[in-house]
Amino acid sequence: MKKKSALIALIIFAVMVVLIAGVNAAGVEFAGSFWALVPPFVAIILALITKEAYSSLFIGIVLGALMSAKCNFLGTMDKLTVDALSTAIADNAGILLFLVILGIVVALVNKSGASRAFGEWAQTHIKTKTGAMLATFLLGVLIFIDDYFNCLTVGSVMAPVTDSKKISRVKLAYLIDATAAPVCMIAPISSWAAAVSGCVESEKYSGIELFVRAIPYNFYSIFTLVFVIMIAILGYDYGKMADFEIKAQNGDLGILEVALNDEKQERKLEEEGPADPRRGKLFDLIIPIVVLIILCVWGLLKNGFDALGEEGGSFIDAFSSTDAYVGLPWGSILALVVIILYLVIRRVVTFEEAMECIPKGFVAMVPAITILTLATSLKSMTNALGASEFVESAMSNATGLQWALPAIVFVVACVIAFATGTSWGTFGILIPIVSAIFPETSSLFFVGISACLAGAVCGDHCSPISDTTIMSSAGAHCNHIDHVSTQLPYAITVAAISFVAYLFAGILNKVGVTWLSIPIGIAMTVIFLLVMKQKYAKAE
Image 1: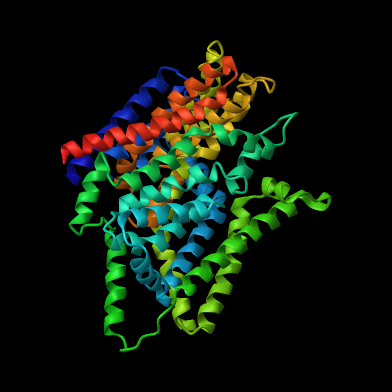
Image 2: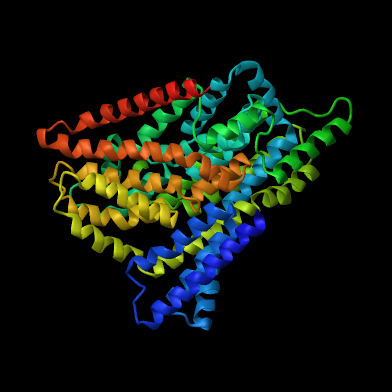
C-alpha cells in the first residue's frame, strides 16, 4: 500500500511538472491567477491519497517554487531554500521556540508523576465517556489565549483521562482542534483578536470593537462549540470517527508509535524503580499550567505595551498591538525556569532529571516543527504567486448579490484557508476586500466581517496543512492524516449549516431581524445531530 501511494505521488508530481513547464512555455502568467492555488491543492490531495504529510507538503513547495521561478532550475532552488524553507524557519523562530518549551514543560510534568496523578484523580471523579469529553471541551474553552498553547496543553493534560474512558486519540485531537481556533476567534482577549484588530482599517470602529461586534455572527465558531457539546451528550459518532471509536473500545486508541513507546518505557522504569518512588501530586500539574498561562499573558501584554511606546494605552490596546511570536516565547521561557525551580524544590524531580527533559521535549516536538516549517514554506510560495490578487479580482465580480454576499464571503474564505492552511493569512487578505464590499454604514457590515473570520477558521480547521490542525494531532499524539480525515465530516457538517445561516442572515437583514439567523443555525445543528442519532441507532 505504501509503495502504491509513493508511486501515485511520483506520477502526480511528474505530471504537474510537465504541465507547468508546458504552460510556462506557452507564455501563461502564473502570478495572480488560479495557478497560485495549485501548489497547496496538490499538497492537500497528495496528503489525503498517500496519508503522508511530509512528502506531500514538500512536493507542493517544489511546484510553487518552480512556478515562481518560471521553470528556471537555479531560480527554483533559490526559491525553495531561501524564500521558502529558510524564511519559514526565520519567520517562525519564536513560535518554534515556544513549541519546544511547551514540549519540555510536558516532559517535566510527566517526569514528576503529576500527569499520572491527574489521571488517577480523573478516574475517580470523571466516571463516564461523556464526562471525559465535556471536561476536555471545558479545558479547551478555558485556555483561550492562544491556539498553539491550547492544543499542546489540553492534549498532554487530558490524554490519560480520555485513554481511561477508551476515547480514541483522533477523537481527542478533534476535541482539541474544535476548542482551539474556534474559541480563540470569539475570545476578545487572545492572540487571534489582536491579529484581527491589526488587519482592520476603519474610520468608525477600533479593531477590537469591530472584533467584539462580529462575535455573534461568527457562525462556524459558535456552531462548532454547540456541535461538540451535542456529540458528547448524545454519545455517538459518524463517518471515519465512528470506525476509530470502535477500535478504541477494543483497546486500539490510535496512539502514534513513538508516543506509545515513550509511555511503555515510562511505565517500565516506574515498575523497575524503588518500591516507594517519588510521586507528583495533582497540584504539581495545576501550578505549572497556571504559571505558564499567567506568564504567557504577561509576555503578550509586555510586548503589546512595548509596541505602544511612551504614549501607552489600555489593556485592550496592548493586546491589539502585541506580537504573539515574541510575547509567547518571552513568557514561556520565564515560566520554564519557574517550573523547573518549583519541581526541584518540591523534590519530585532532581536537577539532572529536569535537564534530561530538555532534549526529550525538543525531540517530542520535532514532527510538529517539521510539518509547521513545511506548511509555512508552502504558504510563502502561495503568497509569492499572488493568491490574494486572484481572490480580490474574483470577489469583485460578486458585488451584485448583496443578500448572498456573506455566504459567498464565507465560502471564499473557507477555500483560501483550506488551500493555504492559515486563518490569519486568509482574513489578512479578505478583511480589506470585505470592508470595501460592505460599507461601514451597511447593516450587513458586521455579518460580512464575521463571515470572513468564520470561513477562515473553517478552512483552517479542515486543512491538513494548517498549523492548528498540525498542533492538534501533535497534542493528541495521533497520526496527522487520520486526524484530518476523521474530523473532516464533522467540520463540513458545521460549515454547511453555517453557509445556510449566512444565507438566512442576508435574507432576514431585509426585514431588520438579522439576529434570528443565530438561533436558526443552532437549531439546525441540534436537529441534524438528533436525526443522525436516530439513523445511527437503526444501523446499530
